[in-house]
Image (cartoon, rainbow, N blue to C red):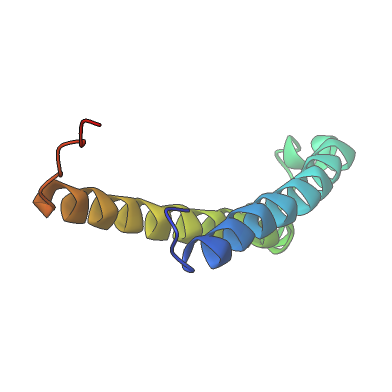
Length: 96
């Protein structure tokens, strides 16, 4: 976390996004498996199927977006830390 307070919200966003994605992703997999025959039925209305699928998958996509936001924030913070470290002149160690 490099001694910065912004690392804590980034961590919570990453963990929260991962939890939301896992919970609703498993729920989506269960929905897809239970509606497998409906998904492959050529007589079924595709817009109704995709509408139902979107309602199930949207929460998993929200978790992915939360995780991605936290990851991009952490990437930007890391690049800022590296840039500021590059500008600092290191002091040589003192010999006793």
